[in-house]
Length: 179
Image (cartoon, rainbow, N blue to C red; front, side):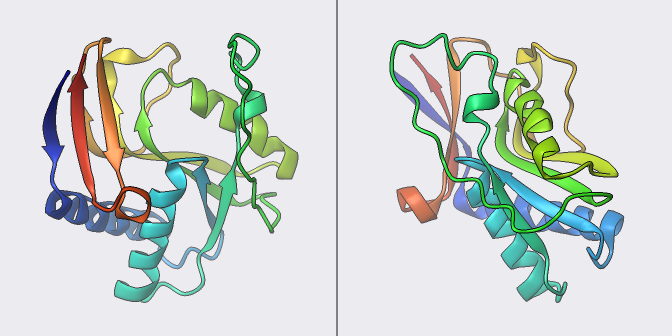
């Protein structure tokens, strides 16, 4: 198994600031916009973006929620091991709001399809956008594309993209792992 560094901690920080600026360009004051981190790993990215937007760009009170899609996935019954659900935390109505789904890696598109179904439990958004740190563009099973992407990676199927966050693994970084 080999591991190649795709993004260093410094590069991740630069990309996060670029994504934050792109969000500001489109959403300005975020009064009608909600960030939704897709559990489990999109939450780290969503929290980091919220912090950058509020502290460094003085964007007031951005609403942030966490969405668990475990039981909305089309493959949740196809595994031998029991699934562990994460916590959904959406303490607001999404009706007629602009929702930005945030996830670390866009691979097949199935997680986003599941998130589209799951968010309907909280109302009908006026618009849904997708922000990802890594877009694995040649791996899609569904016609889903990000509105905002940190980095596009051309990884083949036996390669895995791993995103590390300092909040849970002690360092920021993105790696390409070949088995």
